[in-house]
Length: 472
Image (cartoon, rainbow, N blue to C red; front, side, top):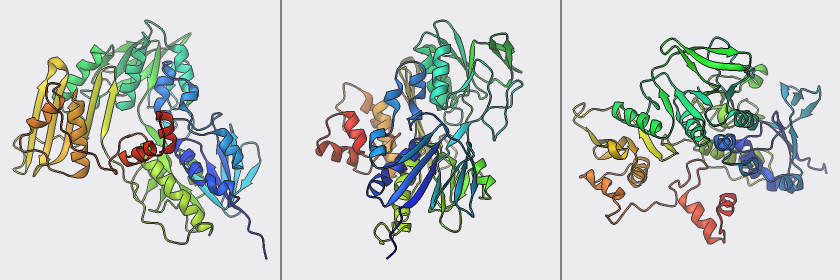
């Protein structure tokens, strides 16, 4: 009888999604059913990129960002090669070539290469879409621990830090920088930050709230290049506002999936590595992709952790089934859909939005737009409904109302006929009676953890946030 050889699973990349995939495979690795090798170009074990802004401003330390237990990996026999770059894939021989001229064989290969920061086409910057950017001194793109450490060294009281990009990450970075005593300048192209989410009134209020939090806002700016002196970056050149002087520049202009390795070995690539609904990139079920590098069944990467973790959880079970190590009962059809609910919190600013709020009062008979504004208190609400079901909303400064709207939007449930009843949820003088979340409703947007998972963790004896996080 031929002895069964452990399935060799090679994972390229070691971000949060890859860490989740390894976690799902860990029991099988510990029992000898599979042998896992992780190849990571970074020198750090998997960490939470969502907290990089906090790391940069000193509000968190690196150990707070870790997402794996190195001892558990070692005990299960997981080999992690840090600081090693994969340079090519030989699909016929099933091996991954490494930068040190070595190679490693695989039975199943998983791309978890994530995405790199988009470097805009500005005079003075390298904007090669398929290469790691070599940025001049004083210019940063906050994607790695090293980026955060470099930005931290730049911050200081009174120093002006230009942030290019008015999306959620740019805003959150600017708000974090403001807490250090530095002077963030948020520069963006649209009429208001979060221009694809807010309407005119909501955008005006958001800009005002940002300024109150210590963030200078420059709207409608068209950046053309960077100005440098003998120390490095000295200002951002624009065709609309002239030279915006600053001591450093933080780029927050989006991300681009890392697909060059996949493309180089003949795999189809579009807005990401093209994979089917079962996360498979080839016809032999040898190569898979997850996370920010993956275009699943024609859907581009969404850049959120929750769907990436759902992919990792499903793929860990699927890989073992392919090897015959797990139950032969077919897995249920995967669902990697992501909610489009957006949340922004920081420095007293609280904003939640979802769907489409572009409808006016008289656009369609079936559409109803409801607006409430209290600029003096930083509050704004717009709800668009179709037959009482929420199709879009924007809420600022109304946390309880926001929570209620999120549940109604994601469940498709009807709102009360009197929309003003929602506003009473944020009135401290009114007894709050909110909808009761179900076990399937999400409690944590970053992790995708549900109310039911957290309740189960608490009932199982977890008493701290860390314990609940590990359980979920």
